Image 1 (tube, rainbow, N blue to C red):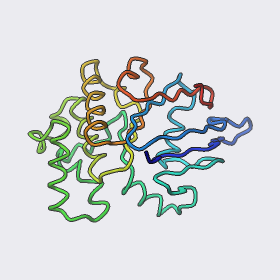
Image 2 (tube, one colour; image 1 turned 180 degrees about the vertical axis):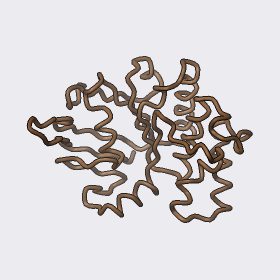
Image 3 (tube, one colour; image 1 turned 120 degrees about the horizontal axis):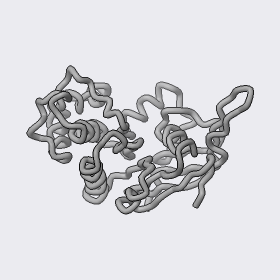
Length: 223
């Protein structure tokens, strides 16, 4: 099986009078098609690690290969294109534009790549169907529940057919039932589409949905 993410001795140090060692040298691989949870206590480095993997921040030291590309050697413009073409993101705040419909929100990353409007519109409808919201395509976020808004965000993350889907505490603002629906949706996308998913979560019960857990404590892999 191919390796989607290869991390070697990754470090992130925030400078200051007393430097903060957020990541102290982590090493691991994530295989193509894996559903992986990054878990650990608050402040342990979970989100920092996800931000490095998702090219939302730059590591201080170490090697990071994504889809066989050494992303540390990319320019800022190349990183932007890489994110648009190969990575998808789901955040805890949904990050939808409230003036736009669900369909229009899903289409935003596709338009950033100057894709064909008609072909992407068809894919957007397909993606909304995958997350169970095809009939809600023309509804605006205020007409949707929190769980439905998060499913729109997931469809948006999938529109450009990303190699890897990153999710940062995606159930943090949801009730128990909606959280379960989102986790089952991730599991379905992983099994049916072979989608590689890397998810940060602090809920111990979430581990039953994933293939593997990477535990991080004080900036180091715990197990």
